[in-house]
Amino acid sequence: MTSPAGERCRPVRCAIYTRKSTTEGLDTDFNTLDAQRDGCQHYIQSQAHLGWTVVERRYDDGGFTGGNLDRPALQRLLDDIDRGEVDVVVVHKVDRLSRSLLDFARLMERFERRGAGFVSISQHFDTSTSMGRLMLNVLLSFAQFEREIIAERTRDKVQAARRRGKWTGGTPVLGYAVDHVKHRLRVIDEEAKVVRLVFELYLRTRSLDAVAEALRSRRLRQKRYKTRKGVRRGGGEWNRNAVYTVLRNPLYVGKMRGQGETLHPAEHTAILDEPTFAAAEASLAARTTGRTRRPLSDEYALAGILRCAPCEAPMAPCPVKGRNGRPYRYYRCRAHQQYAKRCPTGLLPADALERAVAAQVVVVGNDAKATVLLNAGVSPLSGMAVAPASSALLGAWPMLPVPERCRLLRSVVREVRVERGQLRIALKDVPARSGQAEPAAARA
Image (tube, rainbow, N blue to C red; front, side):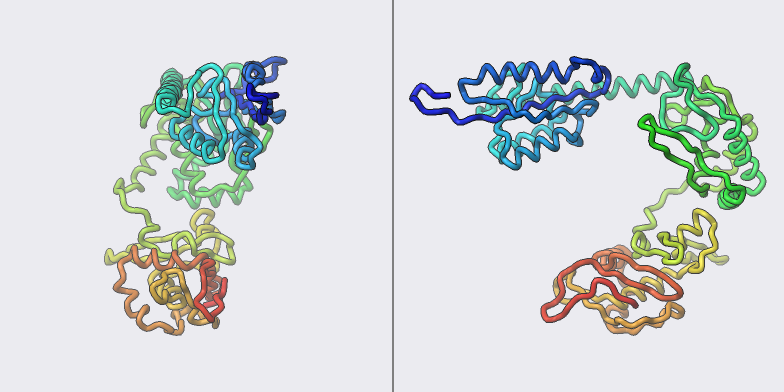
């Protein structure tokens, strides 16, 4: 192709991007993605005198929302743009690329950085001028507004269906299966017996852990189900959280939870009677103080990085009050906490354990990331007999604010494992001081 001056035009490689929010109708011979691509191809052919050519690779996202960028075809398109294989992105409408104003601005910035253009065949504008960019932002604002309106309508529809007692979808519940013909729940007798057993055991023991242990001893499992894609889910062991979820579910008395804590009569058959469910709910409410407090991770420096090696489970904060009302801080194995397993580690005093870990790691110089291992030997955990390699740090440790202790240890320690009265401390990958080799992990 030649220009009026007799010079050959440089080929402009045009990638066509298409998108549809749902998968409905995509299995037909000519769907909306094909219609979008056909329109874009005709537009590119009309610009053949400028050297525009169609990139053969297809970028079709069927069944993906425009509210985010988590779309496989779009990510492939962005990768090809970064490699310099695409000069212009062509879409049928602006909202096919994105319905989020922020995401669209980021895409345009990425296109400009790579020298790629953008064309919408049904909405003509020129992004090279200030007026064109203004009109583009106005169009995107309306696209985002439309997406939010659709989301609000969907939420209102779901709430209206729940007020009428209809099943609106979600994770399958123990005791019920979904009747896809009548769009309601139907009772599974075998699972309903397990539900009644959970309530019976709890009202007898008043302990979530005891119920979970009894269910595990009878080799009972949680709800097993298959997704629409054929993937099998569920079937795990019972723990206190699973028991609590069953005890708090109003579906078992034939009610549907609406907005907030409002309950509405449901269409499906109840498994339990009202007095049984009310008794369990009252018992659970009596166990809750109703007070709010800050997360325990703000008070425990090793929260999230301490693990029990024998159980291969994390160790969670465990606050305890003595008979005199004085609070004590401990760490307890999560396997013991959730599954009531007999853990060889037991309770560990938080203050002594954090002090022992701090004794092994010292922040040196002005660089908070430069660390040195103080003691590479193995010391027993009992009595926290750790060599005081840094008396300054150990002396100041009790006086440090709790947030500062958390920040100090978490900035340099990746993981702490407890096994047979010993600590194994793994440090984060940080640069070592000149002339010293920094260990990636060590025993303390």
